[in-house]
Image 1 (cartoon, rainbow, N blue to C red):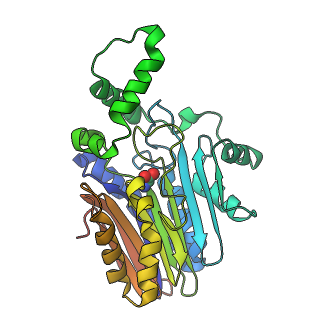
Image 2 (image 1 turned 45 degrees about the vertical axis):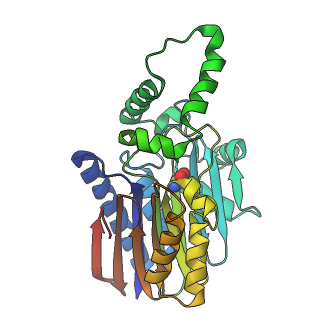
Image 3 (image 1 turned 180 degrees about the vertical axis):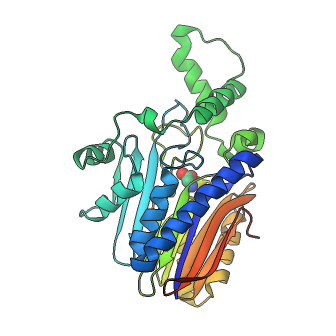
Amino acid sequence: MKFIAVHGGAGRRSDKSVRSKALDAVMKALDIGIETLKSGNALDAVIAAVVSMEDSPYLNAGIGSALNLIGEVEMDACVATEDSCGAVAGTTIARNPVLLAKRVMETDHLLIAGKGADMLAESYGMSVDSNEFFITERNRKRRKEAVKVLLGETEGIPEEKIKKRNEYIDRVYPKLRELIRHYSQYISFSDTVGAVAFDGEHLAAATSTGGVFLKLPGRVGDSPIFGAGTYVGNGIAISCSGIGEQIMKTTLAKNIANLYAFGLPIELAVKSAMLMASKEFENPSMGAIAVSHEGITIYHTSEAFVAGYAKLKGSEIVERKVSDVWR
Ligand code: GLY
């Protein structure tokens, strides 16, 4: 048997039209992943699926990435197999961050961040001319509205610009949970995209994200952190989604793999690790997809988790499903 699962993000349920577009994008990515898996390997399949989701303006990765506090896009991505891993963080110009992560996998390093990631993208001819390339009109509008709400209508006195910005950060960003509680309408339905696959022999995982909406510039989330948002090892491949700070703090993906290695069935390993992690937070928002030779599990403590999976016998699809709620 061959397995593939993809996700387009854990988060809140968005309005109907965005939701259906996100589901369509995940369906398309699943189909691309399935086609690749039929004749290719797990690594090629997860990368093809994630590239397709990075290209969708309705998902938070690549084009359509969430804007940070100053209105720019900074993207994180990771690719992993049992043998190797590559990741990028805070890239502003990589056309497809997951493909750049694959390049890092081919170096002696594991994670390249910021300026270095952008330089690597440029040197491989994998960059775009401007960060604007990733910014959608919808995201620009959302950020503008959010900033207005967060700051009120206070007119800035020019010489106090820095003071104002600091006040903004103090009031809004260090308390991510507060932000989510009070301004939940601004939190995207889709957070992060990912894919995991088993090709009958090997496992692979890939995750890509624009990160958390209104994040501080330079903030890195869980997705590129091996063991937090992405992990392959102990016979299991995992890609997580949700609030990166929660996932990093609880090393979610590695904990799932540990429980699986301990002997728990894949479903129980994912569910137990996520429920244990979620207990630590007032407003937990996490999701994960996992595959092993045993099968596939999709689970979340977030309100919604747009995801899908397929099981293949040779090149015949024996089971396939896409949904935005899995519990
Ligand atoms: N889960 C994606 C992030 O928090 O950056």
